[in-house]
Amino acid sequence: MQWYKNLTLAPRLLLIFAAIALMMLVQTGISWNGMSRMDAASKALANQNMVRMQTLGVLRADVTELRNASYQSLVRASEEVRQSGRDDAKARRQAIQASITVFSAQVAGTETDKPFEAFSTAWDKALVSYDEVTELVDLELGDDAIDVFVSQTRKLHQAATQALDEVSRREAELATRAEQAAADAYSLSLLGLMVA
Image (cartoon, rainbow, N blue to C red):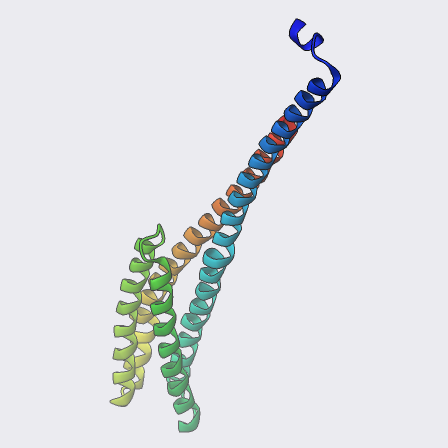
């Protein structure tokens, strides 16, 4: 440190200024890195997880409403009420298929892909059973249609619903991970700023 004592005032001030500028540069780098990590985590939450959770909510509602609409076509009611149930069930099936197509594209290649394929397979089996019920109603075999609806169709519908619940759990887990990544980035950035 003898060399520092031998310096005149101008070089000493210049050296101190350079040290302060270097510390500011380090703090800027730490802040920039932390902000970019928080930005990436926030975008993953907003653009992926939240959109997929919304699609899952719509899909879940349509699956439930399809069962209700299908039941409406089975009740001993006026033809108008039964036709309304059939029309609603048809609209729900189209909405479900659209949601499946959208969600399938969103999760392609992710951790949620395989559980969603399991749901799609279970749902296809349930649809076959719903078609059998519709065919029995068209043949005016109402009691047989009800028997199939409350036994086979119900079990297949429940299996599809459970598979969809697994997809929802997986998506919630991914959202939690993205949230934790944002929190970790913030903590690391804050720690870096305090140390620097």
